[in-house]
Length: 412
Image (cartoon, rainbow, N blue to C red):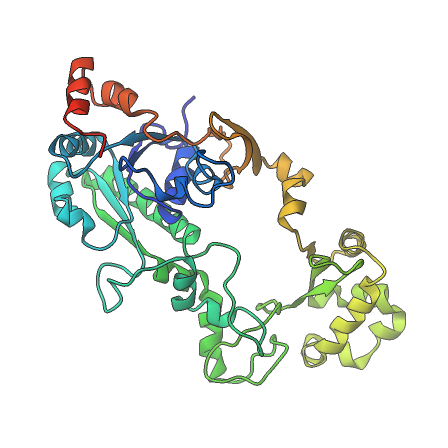
């Protein structure tokens, strides 16, 4: 079946999380993703293993819809295979440390000379220029240096990393946008180009509302925040909504770690909400008459909501609030989500079978296209498609493949 990215061939040299997130999404959308690994394989194949000698979930959940080939780029025959792949691919992706590809003889200038039409996409921690360019980056390092951690947590506590992988997976999504833009421009110009995403830059972009607030501080208070003792930077705000409306997590029964409902109190729903939890008396209370006074008295308002919610589970309280059009959502744990009927209907949890580890549940594709339905396929074993790619994609004969193997092109 023709898919959105059918006919696009991607040579994916990325490893760990950021790059593989990007290439997997493009694989979901129909691109032919050739995962090029060293003979040792992507490091995440062995990290956090839950089954001995099987690819870890860390690897399998980030590398669906790809084919794997192993190539030794320190071997001259391996370099020849790599060069041939560059000539027939639309995109080459990498997230090595600065200078690694240059030392192997495949910097951007060389790659562009080999194939002027190819798009080269790179993920770096901090980019290829600037004082931080040589620094190593990991997920939480990017969150720390991109401004996200300083704004996450409660005001009196330490900074926290968010559970969403905005440094790695967030950068991968940004990279996909850059790749697709470069491919569209190539349609007009016929030329490939270099695309770079730095993890720090992408975290800054994802924290954009915090930059909004940083520039508002000098002009006065931020009334949507529950605390007003600001310094010269955007503060940690706990579960405050961060938008024009008040929002917070309200504790429900039985009081477990995830027994909360996140509630947004919009101006036009207050009257119905007040009558629901406190009758006409609360609806007429001047402390909560409008958004300005509710902001000033929000601690009391949240306490009233929590007192009311203590008689209901998060699902029961959600049903009550949905009846009066109050935006809300239960705090969903991983256990909640993996068994959720809505999630299953959206095909965001898909059961797959693996020759080494058996059945496991993988996340589906969050991008839904009406004419390009996604079939999620299991991740490849290390080098599983080496012979297939050599023969079908590159046109090597059986004898040539045997000669390349003997020369060490695919092994250490």
